[in-house]
Length: 169
Image (tube, rainbow, N blue to C red; front, top):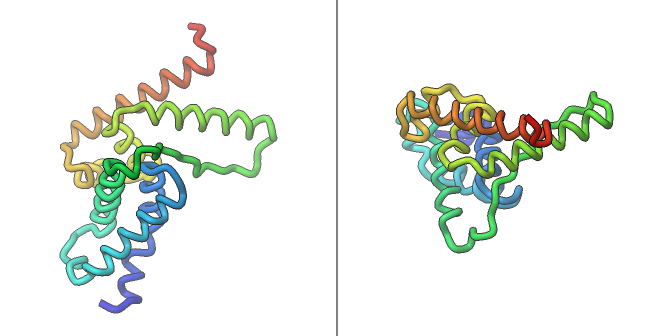
């Protein structure tokens, strides 16, 4: 496989690899390092790449595993989940502040979700993967993925609604 062929396969989803790594790790730098490691592993194993039906799903699984290993290591004790890839330049300052506040709340709520729910909601709602792809990436059955996604969305919705109503019901 030539370098151009490899890049044509890998480049379309490298940003998704980065966003997943950033969701799981503390900083842009950590996510960049993780992305680079995954791309190096793909490059070193490019002879095997063509054996996989879905290289993108395989890379996302590699990214998830690499990041979780990093989080388990002692050097990762200070890492936390961060997410901020939303930007809309066509809104008023007040709307922009409200949106940023809401996104901050969603991020905080997502940090409190169980790990499995965090992964499922990241892959489905942020990265836009299909349920079957998520099942393959996380080695879960379809029902378990749908249940985890439903519970994560419900928790986020309830806590966000509670936050915006200032705890008044």
